[in-house]
Length: 175
Image 1 (cartoon, helix red, strand yellow):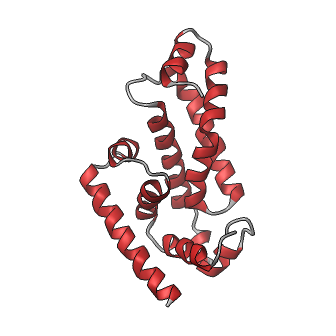
Image 2: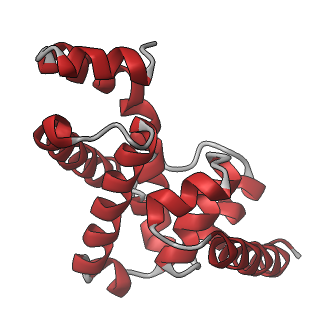
Image 3: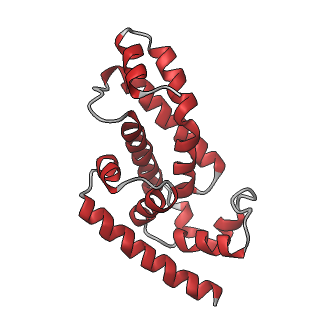
């Protein structure tokens, strides 16, 4: 695993292909699951990941290394997800249950896990994003603030509101 400093040194010496190859190896899986939690289907997540990596490749030479590489990559991925969700009108017309059953790989857990996913899917996109980043990815509010361009206070409020909605929905689904 390469550090940001090692990747920066590679870029500063003009070895962008080597640096990018290491970035892909190091971050692709984490970015994929960050994206997948928001868009559900593998094909959509894969397309968004490819767009994210393409934007990272084209922007790598201009990256100033003032922030962490992780923060920059997650911001690109997050923006790509939000753009996809805004453009995707068809998901709003398909009932939630149909979306959950659309991808057989989506749920491999038990009924509680499925109920948790249903509860998360009922959240508005921005709340869902904040909830996933904090609950599953355990990203600090400070880092989330940089990634999303939102104040830490607003993120905390959004997370706690989302957590309350998830808890309420879980009670409804499981009781």
